[in-house]
Length: 412
Image 1 (cartoon, rainbow, N blue to C red):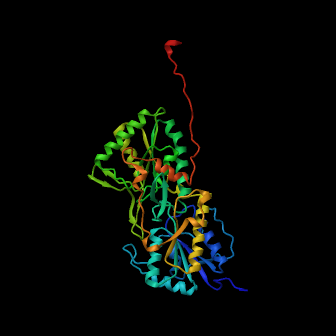
Image 2: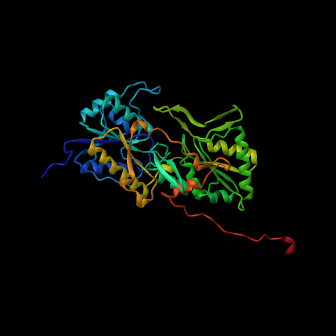
Image 3: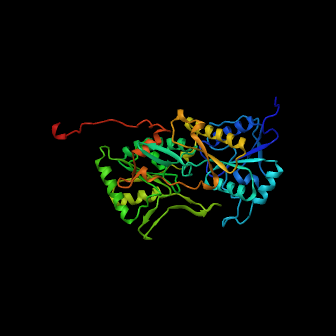
């Protein structure tokens, strides 16, 4: 009888990089538990790649309680890039290699998007570091090759842990804001996260948004007129005279002054992966809508609210089955890979047999499929609603039914 576990004496380390999501702690917990069962000592690397620079910042997770329901990441995160960039010309790879050796780390699991996992894949290819990637982004634009079956269509979709919880938050926020919009007979423009893709913006449809602007469909000079016409049509036919519009932070909008279709930046500074900080499209849209239509309009950024708070059950289950696939990769010592869901599935069908592995070098970004968006109505369609229905529910409809009789002073 074998007394020791398969990987007794080996050490696995986990890091989280990039923006946080509600499913990061859930993913850490699930990976940690499975690695421990195999016999690994499990370390947590603090603040992403930054925790492997300098003297290192490493904690022991092996026999510690871990709250996977709590959103965000207890390991913290950063946008540190191991490789030199225009933002930072220091090559941190030698420091990382030294600390992996110093802390006797045998396998590295990187939880992140295209940037974090892209760097990990490069380290695997160039330095032969044993790495396994794990998907993460609330923008939901990491190419996972997940198929959505709708009718006779097979649509290449994306599903990353953290997105379902964030999508539900956007839907609920959109539903709640309706009472304010109705009270003042206003249009409210909701700005959601989504640098290059509109996946998260579509969730506002579940909360009552009737127009959605996304990065994949630029609002050119000609399309602006279509946009304003659509606003007038929907607002004036609305019995209660209010309208909710959702817009991705990465929406490309025609600027009358510059004569160009542009992005709106909160800051011109870029991070170490070359990404600027977006923000402000809701205010720009609100100002132009009010000036063009005469209807009171306000901008509101959902911002970090969408990626905050506890991890919902669907995400817990999703991170768990993907961690099961990590176990498979560890047992086969098959590195440079990332587990993914093969098809969009209901909660009950979130099982290991619906997962697969893809090469980390072919992850890339996946924009919203054209099948999900109607360019004529500037809104998401029923195909996208079906996609969301697998993972979130319609929020409680906030509605005050009234039909007050108008008082005529001549009849008094």
